[in-house]
Length: 209
Image (cartoon, rainbow, N blue to C red; front, side):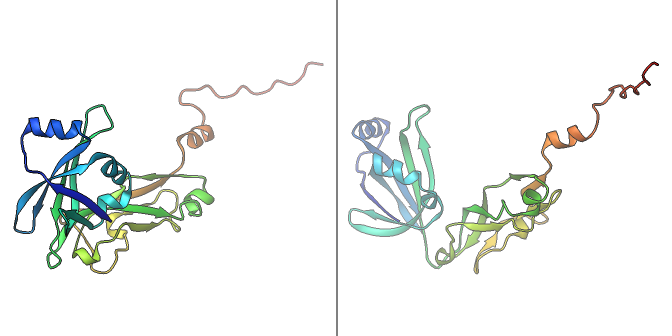
């Protein structure tokens, strides 16, 4: 995905406010053992790009004053209550160095899983992305999570994920967070058993002759 920006010569909060009034967004590009560069971007194209999932997890081609370099979106700030981008940060990518970034999870086959199809269960997505390490060329847009074999009472964990070649999870020793769980909806179990403390049903009396 290509992103276009221009160098920002004037700095400071006053200059940033003027930029925003003119429909621009101040930003910065840093990393790869180069000096940080201040940039400005048109607001509306940036706002549209932020609504695209891959913009947050893919290598981007950032063109600044006609020169292009590869970057990752690292952060952005929004106005407290208006749909306006206030600032954006990009990190340069070195093709020879591994990077760490979050990658979204895409779930498939939930509707045909035993948990849903056979048990009428509820699947809860605990995580929506994971932190990975890889070379820029190996960075996936997303990681697929196949739920075809998920059964009631079971769950999938991060270490169960099938990762693309060259991609590893960033986890502490012994860490294995839950990705999804499958459970019976709360009402189903309650309907099967009488309410706690309820009196047993009275036996029917024979009809008087």
